[in-house]
Image 1 (tube, rainbow, N blue to C red):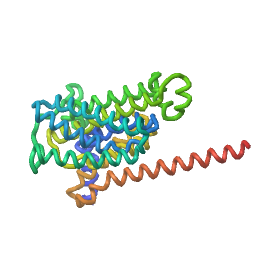
Image 2 (tube, rainbow, N blue to C red):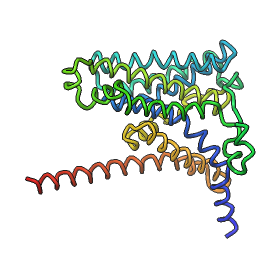
Image 3 (cartoon, rainbow, N blue to C red):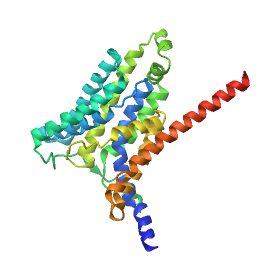
Image 4 (cartoon, rainbow, N blue to C red):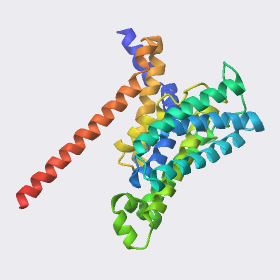
Length: 313
């Protein structure tokens, strides 16, 4: 009985929720970027590779220029380049986005692994200049809340601002309407004099930028200036699942990322009670359940729609 109470205290401790916010943020950043391409009718399965390259080049920029902020800038520039390259193949050359995404993921693993060993040696990059952490004066002294928000990276708060801004962009601006129309009704949008291809380029560019920021957050915030091979650890696929679960709504995708972060934090916190091999699969198992839920829900909606159509006819 005491063991169960100890587990419950561990699961619902302030440190668990603090780790939840840390783990959720890189996934959320990639997910809100993936929401842009999803609205534009592009299935971007290559986000994991984008995150991984953002993580490496963020650290590499920090190493070259001795600044975490300049490392972040290099990761953003890399994200711009990868986003444009992805759009070149998918939008311009009409290549299959699934194949291009898988190729991008494979290329990222090989490229970052090779460059990491060539530049930093077998042990990878460690203890390089990172991005700052903050403690908000008003909140840090509040019981429990102060512990949850203690020493969070500045980019955690910036991510929340990004979520709000992108939600406003998608649902409250003409460009957001055009972006959604480019994926849902491209011919109608073209008739109105707006190029759907241009909106798809913009969506891919935004996705690349946010995945680059996600990778830089992972290496320069979560791990404080550390890069290890394949450190994205399938977060791009989880971010894609969050996009689908949240119906490409940036706010809902952020909530889905928080769910992943919570179960990831639980897995880390329970390693003293359960084998780490078992706890490591918890967040990914939850992600699979999320996807199954979406598929079942979509199937049920289609059945209801067919029944309504049959009754009216």
